[in-house]
Length: 112
Length: 106
Image (cartoon, rainbow over all chains, first blue to last red; front, side, top):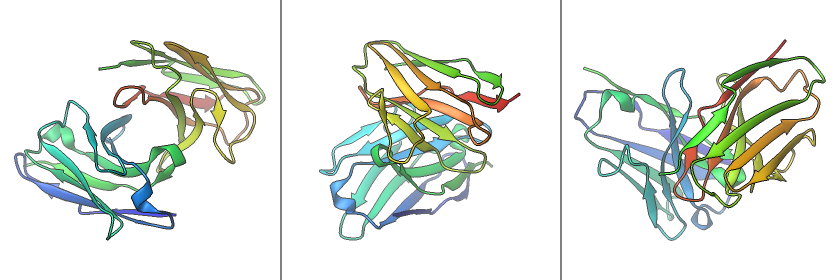
């Protein structure tokens, strides 16, 4: 099983970024997927969930700004981050929580 | 939103000691509770799910218990590889992590 995040980087406040998570080694289309973030030196913060049938749930802190989506044909999970704020600075992990599959994380830094 | 109050924030324990970490939910979460361990620079790893079920490959010295709003993680005999940060996670209504417990060896 492998989950590999990409798309992170340094972005200015108010701008957008799109994260990707490429999955392999399991039947991606059968699993609900999560994005979790961790600010530097802080705890885990759940961000969003998408079910195998593409139903979505968001944390209040990102609702209306972030969009989770998936492409089962490409075995890829996405997180569109809009209207970014400094407090969105964190390592972003994709994960299958129930099976404890986690990626290595990708850093997003929001700063002018 | 469901809030998770985890305690203690940190603790120091000796080898072979019993360690207990607790999480209190702001409402009944019906055993939708998991425990994770995170080591420095690593992704978290699942220990316990559904409040008391041991994830595959996790040593039997880890156990979970609780119901309603009160849950706990117990390490029966602390080992040298157990220090790290432990988090609870509720999945009853959306998802919420506890603030974490930093466990160190004395």
